[in-house]
Each structure stands twice: as structure tokens, then as C-alpha cells.
Image 1 (cartoon, one colour):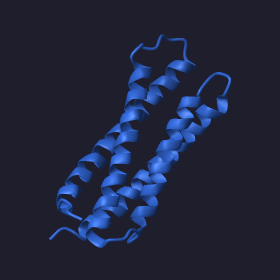
Image 2 (cartoon, rainbow, N blue to C red):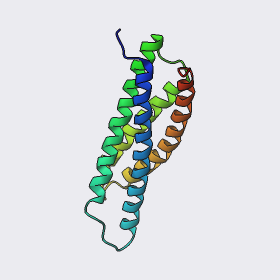
Image 3 (cartoon, one colour):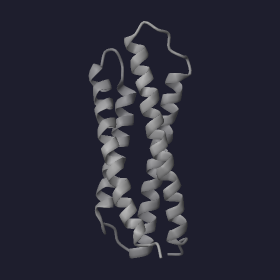
Image 4 (cartoon, rainbow, N blue to C red):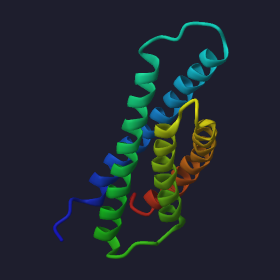
Length: 145
């Protein structure tokens, strides 16, 4: 397979991970403001919910991109997957992000469980992102001179 160098892929992954963490943080802020305005008798900005949804969509794309880069890079370097806990944590993060996006699409006044599930998944996602970041750093150390 004629693949680009792993260092090139690592740079893309590093930027993508940084953007993922930034997006997660912005989602936490916009989600917090949405929750606050829902509980208080104040008017919510019309752009806030669409921004939250757009940020969530970008997060899904970034995480799927990171999954692709990880698989291509690992297969290109080793020919197999599963050389560290990073794969397990990465798959967990992908599952959490996709399930969180699904639960967000179910949020409605008639389905209060969906909001609770969405918030719970996003709390666990923060832990997952921490784990994938730490194990990813360990993986990257193998490739730095």
C-alpha cells in the first residue's frame, strides 16, 4: 500500500484532536447556556441552538476522521490493529459520539429520557476523550525521533 508518511498523518490527527477538544468544550458551553435559558424565564438567542447542533455535527465528522486516520496509519505502519489501549478508547469515543448524536436527535418534551441520556453520554465522553488523548500521546511517542 502506498501510504503517506505516518508523521504527516500524525500532524493531521493532532490538529483534528485539538479541534475535537475545542469543539467538545464549545459544546459544553453552548449546552450549558441552553440548559440555563431553559430553566429561567429569559429569552434565548435564536442562533444558539443551531450553533450547538452545528458544533455537534462537526464533532462527529472530526471523530470519524480521527478513526480513519488511526486505522490507516496503524495498518500502514504495522499491518495490523490493536497495539495499545488507544484503539479500545478510540472506539469507545466513536461509539459515545455517535450515540450522543443519536440521543440529541431524540430530545423532545415527550421524551425526557433523551436529554438525560445525551448529558450522561457527554459526561462519559469527556472521560473518554481524556483517555484517548493520553493513550494517543503514548502512541505518538513511538514515532518521534
